[in-house]
Length: 495
Image 1 (cartoon, rainbow, N blue to C red):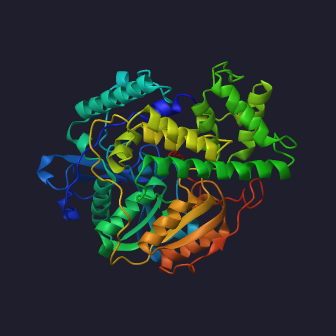
Image 2: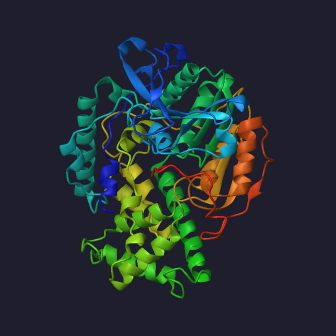
Image 3: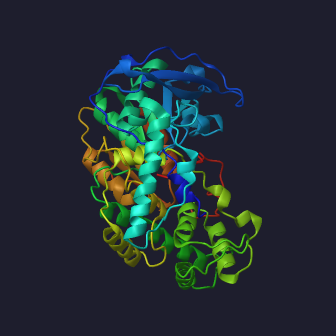
């Protein structure tokens, strides 16, 4: 777990982006061929300009994976999908089986794409020595703050050197233009899209750039690109994790199968936090020291599903000093996106000028969230840009969508990565309809709520939106409904 924050910084630096260019600047049709390791899935590529403002400055290949509609007679078109991250490989996820409900896959070809720089698309590459170099994840003084800035700067410089021109053009506005090139290459007059987490920012910016090309966009667990300060960003992130911690503790109180049932979960957790802060908390399995940020990452990762049962077993293991059962271990549940910094630091300008400022943010977050202390994802995102050598080319702004048909936004009320308040803000700015899932975890469509699935499917198929203000009841973890064979979340951690 302690290596997660270091791995998250394995990314390339990205640069400036200028005006929109028509999707016709993309070259070549899609030459679909069977994917070697995914029966029933076709693989292909679309070639796009690296710099959409200057198409003569080189190209990048965007990898695609397609599952054809199961009922060709009922086919409406294609649905493009992205799992978030940033850095989630949508093509790879579709190859692995990621899809929406049978009602959707009957009528649409499911098409996943690996955004530029990611997976099987033309990759952004960084130096291994720079990636694995030791650096402070949570600076304790100004000297360590400067060490972190130097680490990020050297890493970004290595990405620039190894990635060539693509290292300057990986921001989400460029990705949105790539999406329009994919739409045109697929032969769809207008775009139908499902994006989750960071994929919502792609959809939001697509609707800003190409409102007349939108058919239906479902944006699940939204980014709010109007947050201007590191203080605001980190606090909203941390409070969202603390809110789900309260729900987790309440679940343990009412659920006899919880490994911490009958114990004071908050008291036990705060004792673990104190022990980690003193450098005395160790993993009973490996003997390794568990840092405060690694402990925060355990909460973060297990709140996505949510996987409350496994988290309870791990916390009991840490508190009692006994190894958890193999089924409860969390390490392998946290795949890491190696372009996270590249994209995030190009999309967000969240400056932190010195250690005193960063420490004030950390202390404020800890005071607002006494159990979890900090959102590990939010912390890594903000600190990963300290010292990053290139400017932010796609900085924050309130959503400005004019002329697009109505969009559907989804959100869990208790989301550990993209706070519910973010979706509320994005819906308010864009005039979109927000459907609220009154439950837990990240990615509302994949939480086995029949209410959420039906409303989303109706919109994708017919364009009919649910009534404004619609709420769908929570699905209790461990219940029969939670175990039903519904849409699965993509295996991506991050936004």
